Image 1 (tube, rainbow, N blue to C red):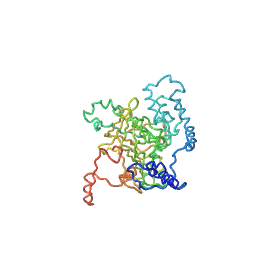
Image 2: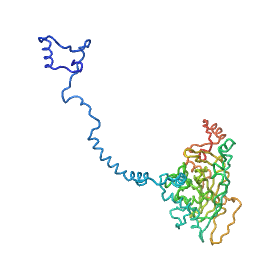
Image 3: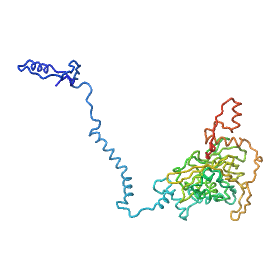
Image 4: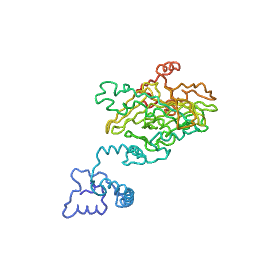
Length: 462
């Protein structure tokens, strides 16, 4: 064997032994290298013991595994209750299940399991209790958890206090404005009455008229020392609990300022959601004008409705926005004027989304001519609430806004614009109508960036 082949340099003793073998009596020797091998190739030195790179060691040894053992034991102990519960749930506490739940019942259970965690929590039980006609006494105004939205409002409607009568002005959506049902080809899989029962049967408001205690509208008053023209939050844009998803029928229990707004919107439909699933959400207001007695407040709210009930899949009905105006005394005891409704100056003002099956959904946009709440007159003092006669107008009365002189004010358009810029920051850049844009671009010597959309970009109808 050749020592050079393995890169070793023979020691002196080894060289002497080789020499003796070559000069021995037998004169026989083995060849050092195979024929044709280059004997002059460099020889690698063997590093002395303790110097040079150490031979690679195993990455994982038994000691490493032993060190991980406490972590593994802690993980198992921490998750042991969950593992046991899962095992018992799957095995029927160690025994084979004696029955199976029919798919129809499971679908019914899922309609109440709003956050899809496999359990019915107290808030989800409220919807179940309502459908069971559960009549146990519930105190009024208990954290705003009542599902009978008209139950609490008479608390402020008392003798010696003012009440405000609010009416609805409502016309259903024009089905022909929807792309899904605008032509004969769209009826291939069924008519709107078959596919969208909640939408096509919604022909009138749920509660056309009601008298509220005027002080309920105090929720819209500006915070103390709030400056004129500075928007403020009336209802936060986040849910107290988990935000609803598509497969959802009942709204979360309203709290705080949500309670009265939920009551107002429920005059249109009982399943009102005071916050949308998608932003912008919530309700904002801005102080437009003031004098020694009154505030003039501009309101913008984003809410939506769930129109379907079981066994139909959920159908979400989202108005573009609710625009409102409120003239109220500074202490909230008297209301001069109130209105809140969807804008109708756009070709499309309603967004719709509905589930078509376990893994499918559809979207569309349409136009609703009227969906408004308005006060029939300024709030009136109630000397009795047992026998009250209220004369209702045929339509919304005309209010003379010029009769009130303001100490400070900004225009209505400017007030709405300031809220809009908070909800849609891109509105900080001015967007102009098509023809006006070219005229302005020519005056300012600028280019025109043209955007065409199916719906409005600055509300929920897009």
